[in-house]
Image (cartoon, rainbow, N blue to C red; front, top):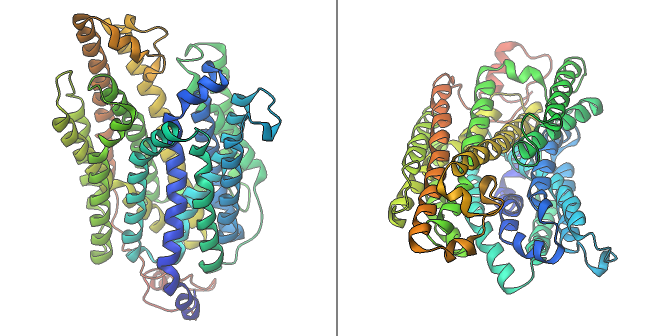
Amino acid sequence: MTQETQATVKPNIRVVLFGLMIAMMLAMLDNMIVSTALPRIVSEFGGVNHFTWVVTAYVLGTTVSTPIWGKLGDLYGRKAIFLTSVVIFLIGSALCGMSGSEVLGGSGNGMVELIAFRAVQGLGAGGLMVGVMAIIGDLVPPRERGRYQGMIAGIMAIAMVAGPLVGGFITDNLSWRWAFYVNLPLGGLALLILATRMHLPKYRTEHRIDWLGAALLSVGITAIVLVTTWGGNEYDWASPQIFGLAVLALVSLVAFGLVERRVAEPILPLGLFANRNFALISMIGFLLGFAMFGAMNFLPLYQQTVQGASATNSGLLLLPLMFGMLVVSLVVGRTITKTGRYRMFPIVGGVVMAVGMALLSRLEVDTGKLASSLYMLVLGAGMGFLMQTSMLIAQNSVEQKDLGAASGAATFFRSIGGSFGISLFGAIFANRLAGSAAGSAFEGGTGEGQGMDLTKLKELPTQAREVVLGGLSDAISHVFFWAMIITIAVPVLAWFIREIPLRTANDVPPPDATPEEQAEVALGKAPIS
C-alpha cells in the first residue's frame, strides 16, 4: 500500500467503522431476534414441525457462504463483494417480512417461503461477518487492529442480548414482520456510508474461482449441519438418513481436500493450516463456538422456567454476560494495540471461560439471580479475552492476499463448532431430562426444550412443580458441566501459540523481494519500493 493510499484511508476510518459496526450488528442481531417472534409466526402459518428451520436455514446459509465470501473478497476486491453481501442480506430481509403475504401472492405456503428467504438472508449474513473482519484487516495494521476488533466484539456482545429484547418488543407492539423490516433502514444507512466513504487498498491477484471446490465444500457443510440438526431430533442417530448424510459429508470433504491441492486459487487454501498459529487458532475457534453457542442457548431456558422470568426479562438478565464481554474486549483490544503482545489473552480467556462454565454447572432451583448474574459475568469476561484475539491471530498468521480466506476460515470454524455444540448439548439435555421427573411433565419434550409447554408447568401443583424444576435445573447444569470439559482444551491449545510480532503495516513486498526484505516489510520496517 502506498503512502498516498494510506493517507486516503486514515481520515475515513471512524466513519467506515461506524458503517461496519451497523453491518455486523445486523448480521448478529438477526441470528437472535427471530427467536422471540417464532411463536407468533407458528400461530399464523402453522408448520410447528418445521419451525426450527427458520433458525437452521439462516445458520446453514451463513456457514456455507462464509469461506466463499472470504475468497471472493481476496480475488475481486473486498468493497464490491461486501456491498453485494449487504444487498443480498437486505433483499432476504424484505422477502422474509413479506412471506405468506398478498404481496407475494398469498400462496398459503408462508412457512416454506420464510424458510427459503431466511436461507437467502443467511447467505448475505455470511458475507457481512467475514467482510467486516477482513475490511478491518485491510484498513488497519495488525499492531493497531486489536482496538477496532475489540469494538466489533463489543457489538457482537450487545447483539446477543439486544436480539431477544428487540424481538420481544417488536413482536409485542408491532408485527413479527418488523423483526425483518427493521433491517432495511439500518442496512440502507450502512450501504450508503460504505459505498461513498470506504476506500480500500487494492492487491493484484489472479481472478480464478474454484467453483468445484466451492460446490464440494457447500455440500459437505450442508450435510454436516443437517446431521447435527436432525440427529437425535428428526431422525435417530443410527438411522439410514443420518448415516447417509454423514457419508455424503465425508466423501464431499475428502474430495474437496483433493481438489484444493490442485487448483490455483483454492476457496480454502489448505496451506494455511501448515502455519502453526493458524491451525491452533482454528481449533480454538471451533471449541469456542462449540462451548459458547451450544451452552448459551440454555441460559434463557433456565431463566424462563426455573427462575420464572418473562421472555423480555430473560434478555435483561443476560446483561452481565454482555457487560463482561464488552468491557474485557475493549480493554484487551487497547492493551494489544499498546503493547503488541497477545499470546497470554487466549490462555487467560480459556481459563476464565472454563471457570464461568464450572460456576454455571452449579445452577440449581434455588440459585438466586444475583449469583447466576455473577456466573454469567465471569463467562462473558472469558469470552471477551478470546473473541477478537482469535481473529487477530488468524489474520496475523497469513499474507495479506489470503486475509479474506483466513477471516472466512476463522469465522467458519466458529460457526461449525456452534452447530455441533447446539446439537450435542441439545441431545445431552434431552437425555438427562428424559431420565428425570421433569421429562414426563411435557408433551413431546425434545432437545433444548422446544416441545415444553410452559403454561402446563405453571399449572402443576406446587410439589410437582418443584420436582420438575429440579429436573430442569439439573439437566441445564449438566450441559454446562460438559461445556466446561470442552472449554478446558482452549487454554491448553493456546499455550502452544507462538507470539509472532504484529505487523505495523499492511504493505505487500514486491515479488522479487528476498526473504530478509519480506520480513522487514511484514514488520513494517521497510517501505515498498
